[in-house]
Amino acid sequence: SQTIHQWPATLVQPVGSPLSLECTVEGTSNPNLYWYRQAAGRGLQLLFYSVGIGQISSEVPQNLSASRPQDRQFILSSKKLLLSDSGFYLCAWRPRLGRANEQYFGPGTRLTVT
Amino acid sequence: GQQVMQIPQYQHVQEGEDFTTYCNSSTTLSNIQWYKQRPGGHPVFLIQLVKSGEVKKQKRLTFQFGEAKKNSSLHITATQTTDVGTYFCAGPDSNSGYALNFGKGTSLLVTP
Image 1: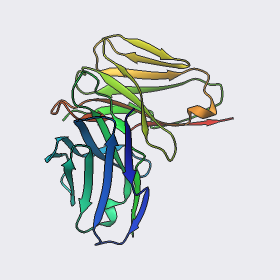
Image 2: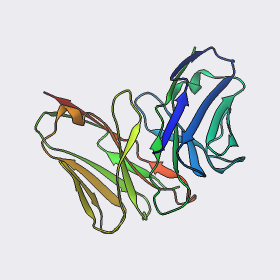
Image 3: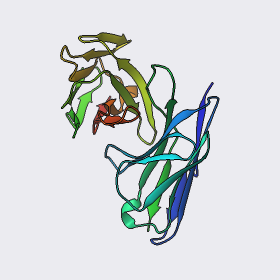
Image 4: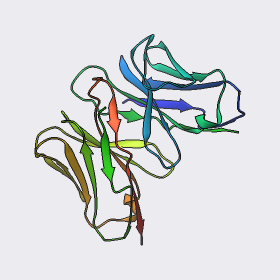
């Protein structure tokens, strides 16, 4: 069966510090991968998605970036965090091939920028 | 751009009462999906509807897809405290075949 991992689970970082969040998927190949951010009590904002190694699509302008160095690894980064970057960061995957297009979410990382 | 809207934003019910959340898209959807997020947790896929007028049931949950494939609803019969959470609908993004547009969700609180 497929599983998705995210770490760390929680993170407290000062303004201006760098960020690196990692997401890995097991049990599947060639997944589509997604990064979302959820502000407290709010909906899901799609940040990036990837359909393959090195292929990144950005949905909103921001000081965040994403990379996919391996098929089942998706990384979210920032060089300098802003207070507004605080939130719940969720990674998700879906099969690239086939008709199923539901997404499966990881446990998330709660980021607080102080 | 394409928008997916949900109402109400919040709903507080007594245990045993029914609950309904509504989802409307500004464009016709090829399918619509529903997710549930428990407090402190991550969204979990519940169901996908594809056909016009489709109705699917999962125990006390009934999902409907409108005839025009632009709206959907989730109805919970006789709510239980385990139903607490935020329910999101999502439809395929019209600009990308790979992304979903999520509604802002309906947060359900059930008091015993």
